[in-house]
Image (cartoon, rainbow, N blue to C red; front, side, top):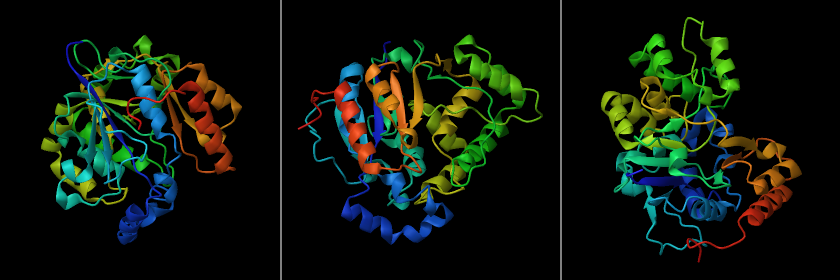
Length: 333
C-alpha cells in the first residue's frame, strides 16, 4: 500500500479528581442515560491501556502515527518522546462551543478535525487490543477502501443500549440510499462475510424495510473524506450530537460513517475471523487463556454490567495481557 494509515485511540481516566469535578458540574445534563450510558462504569479504567500500546508496537509496527485523544490527561507511564505518538487534547480539534464534552459520540463526530490526520485511519476504543500480528490490508484494500464485515441485522431495543444511535444512523443512511441500493452495494452475500452473516441477511432480506447492519465491535477503518461529506450534508444532525455533553438518545455515533461506506458500496469485505467481542461479565480462565493464545488478531474486551469480583477480574485481566506482552514498549517511560 502506498498510503499512510494512522491509528486513533480515545482514552479517559475516570478516576482523575479534576476530571470528575468537571464532569460533575454538568452531570444534570446526562439525563436518563446517566444510569448506564454515562455511569461511572462508562469511564472506568482497568489499568490495561499500556498493553494497547505494547500490542500496537509488536503487532502493527507499520502504523504511521498514533493519535491519543484525551481530555487534558496523559497516563503517568506514557512516554511522549516517540515520533509516532501525538497526544491530542479535546480543545485541539473539537470546536470550543461543544466543550467540555464527556460524550464519546461527540468526540468521534469531530475526529476528522485532528490536525495532520491521514485520509486513511483506524479508530480504536481503548478496550480493543491487538493480540496477534495485523497488516495494513486487514483494515484497507489496496485501492484504499475500508474493510468491514457485516450483514442485515435488526436494531436491538435495549434500554440504555446503542439502539437509539443505530436508528438515528440508519434514518440518515436510508434517506440517501434505498433498500434496493443498499443490498446491491453492500456485498452482503460475499463468502468473506461468513456463513453466520449470510444467514442473518437471508433471514431479513425479504422485509419491507432495511433494518440495520450487524455490528462486530472491532476497530473502525475510516476515510476522513467520508466524515467531512456527512458533515456537509447533515450538519444540523452532527451539530446536535456534538452539542450533547453526555451520550443522548438524539446522538448519532461512529457507526454512521461505517454504515455510509457500506451502503454506498465504497468498502471492501473483510474476512470474519480477524477478531471478536468479549465481555468481562463472563471473564474466566477461558478468556485469559484465549488472550495469550493469539487465536485472534484483535480482541475487544468490553467492560461488564454485572462483574461479581472486580478486583480479581482486574488482576487476572492485567496478568493475562502481561503474559502476552511482557516487554515494555517505546511508548512507556
